[in-house]
Length: 214
Image 1: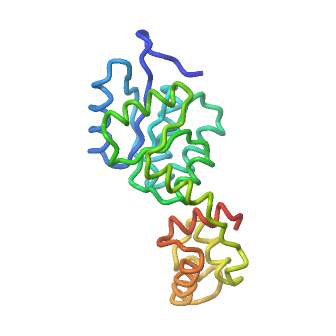
Image 2: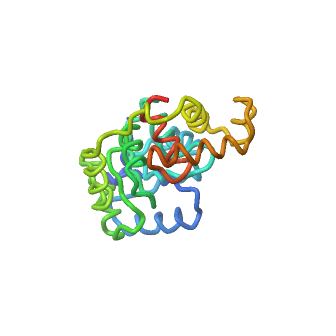
């Protein structure tokens, strides 16, 4: 169970791999009399420990981080039974990341270009049981839901194999060794697969592979 501070303030943990962002967010939230930052973490792995120690009401979670990213950290936090709400705060507004974060259990999705007051209100909103979405994220989510899903059959068997290993976090050299092909061939399969499923980088490809059960 989460514990409010003695004065009833919302307890918040900040998770972002950039120290300057963490400091800026801490100063922003400190300007709100009803919010207290009780911990910070530089990646998702560290966040698991900090949340376990501080039992916050809200975790403000970045997505793109080393070791354990925000999507996986969110999934593991909630699977561990922590009584906390996860609010994503990121620079990315593509549908794959939004859907992955929400599927992992995040209850809100804000972008870092949001007005500072919207970030403060977003923290309050998720603590009230609401689900704030940045307008760009909301629009992308609606568009994604209206688009037909890309079928797995669009991929060749080898492209599917490569994407499956990308999802597991393997580098091209490791994939080449695992599949017994050259690194150049791996790159060619990735380029083709990216075009087929409509993504631009490995992170988006890994999220696509996860959502489509590869």
